[in-house]
Image (cartoon, rainbow, N blue to C red; front, side, top):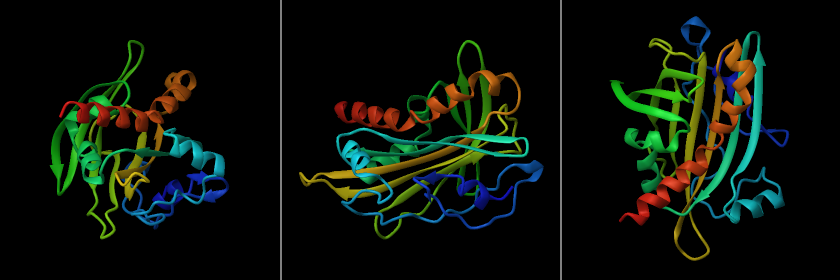
Length: 234
């Protein structure tokens, strides 16, 4: 499976929301996530053009816009989606949260443990334990912070590290931080978050797939709540 095929599965209102270049696949059929094209300008006061007027108004009111996505190919089945959220914070402050492994227990749902287990070049290898009393999964994500664009846009990408033990089949996602100035003159951020996960065939997929999707797409709200709590503690 090629990364471009997976990325093109993010469809918003009939238009492709993510575009990617073709890359070589992982060994053992896992997805190779190597490069993704940016969509839109990084520093802007306008909202994503693919949103409807109603969605744009909801976004301005502080709601998160969610576009669910399911993508299948052969025995692979990915669930997740694409979200947009406006956060009342500067881009560097929000990026610091997304790069802080200690914060992952607060911003990733059902996370019992998140710890840095190594480095591969500039990529962080983060072991994550997630679940509840009924089901639990441990896996390691490769997390990559892209260089800051001249416009101020920042991006953090993550994907399953297939060479380390993992109890889910595959996962991939990104956070895109796009700064702009709000009407009151304060810095704000448009946080775009995309994620696709294949939990694997079997009872977990049959019974818990939609719960997994709901949890995955709650991340922007958890990020916004965590940022607000951190700011109140200053």
